[in-house]
Picture (cartoon, rainbow, N blue to C red):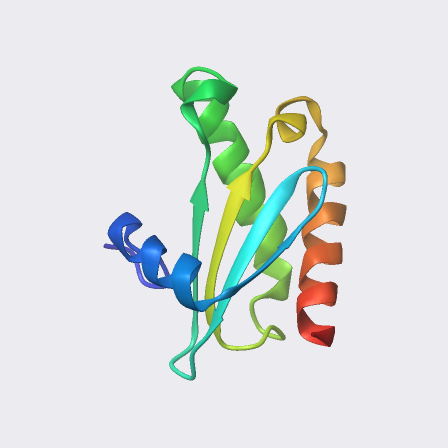
Length: 106
């Protein structure tokens, strides 16, 4: 398993104990944890074939990368919504920026 990655079975712990924030493209679940930053991305199968889902997953990971050094430590799980399948990378990056900013102010 890659460092900084949340295994899929552990998502339930983040869903149950964390906070959630959403916008048009994504839902962010956040669980504070002092041991560093870990993230996971969930893309439903109804959004398309594997190539489409993998592209969306890569875009979310890359858009979140600039926030890694300055973010609060914890576990982040992003759930991709249907509107993100037609969005540009810039739209997804702005959506993540807004979610992280809202999460830090809560």
